[in-house]
Image (cartoon, rainbow, N blue to C red; front, side):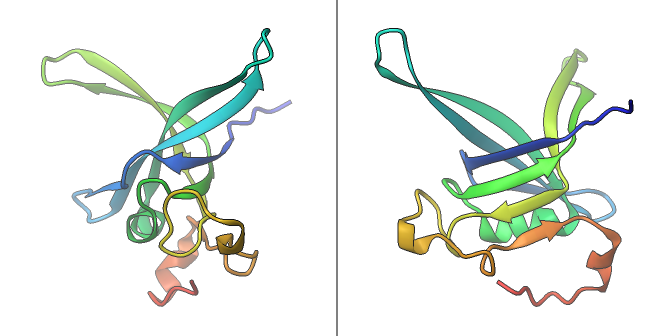
Length: 145
């Protein structure tokens, strides 16, 4: 059997997306996304555990994240988990594990951050999805959302 490397998370941004550009002018967005799990402990008390994920989006998806997501926004991200090695300013090897967002879907109302109310949750037609593929070069900059 072959292998599969695919992460799917729904969470809230812990801060506004940080966008930088490569030397070839490709946008790269770094996002900090929190997912939470609620459970009852042995004493029957409600507990919550939050896990933080580093998500990286490239190209048009990065630009869409910068334009439409902000701290508190609820979004869905999908893509492979990857670990990168880099050297810090002291020459020490460091490792970063992140989700490479090949797909992103906003789950808040347009421009929303914080918890969406029942009436502000978008329908399937309103939910915007950004997929990384070669067809982005052929698309107009006029977004449907």
